[in-house]
Image (cartoon, rainbow, N blue to C red; front, top):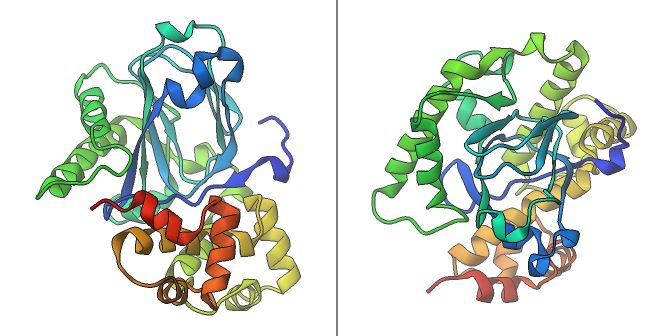
Length: 299
């Protein structure tokens, strides 16, 4: 894997748009190329997250890197990004804009805890990055899932249909694409990933409470300085920033899904007061909580 500084690698806190334990996103060419100009192509820089990511490509352009290994995108191809794998995407800069499909990829991000709940020995397994199959059904499932992308509101009972589609897709991928993790990952990397998973799980369970880097370090029996260095070197961000991002994502859901006041939401999400939420929301989202509510709440 090419050398990277920790500043080049960021941890992504995935925001789930619905009550489902997964996200469905469509990446459109208009999102990557301003005014249809190839010179303005946007790349997705090195990052990682706890979710399994399944990418389905509609074009033959672009390069997907997983843990430093390049995979050239092909039409009707799947790229699998394992939980905690570092990945990035280099956009196409050669194919004329008008020759590209409107949607370049559909991305499915699945909760790590959801996978571990029904895949035996999940922590010992590893998905191969390029999933190849001669069967048409997996591609059909991804195209079907694409219709529900970007937090589209679900009609009655559609949540059951979505869960079924994701389970069916995972059946094909698990059947044909799983291998043992110790054949793919060094022992040290596996150990660090397991520690990070525990820290992330602890934070997910307790971010609404009055926790911070010091209390998290004490919970795991580490000194504050060691915990700080370990977390930043493996995550690319500080624990404080990670905790804040998680609280902001929770506040987003409350802003669009309830009529609670900003103060009530701030207290529910672990902020000490409304001003703390407003300041952090402005910093990370570039908008105030009330403006966010007005912009994204559907009536």
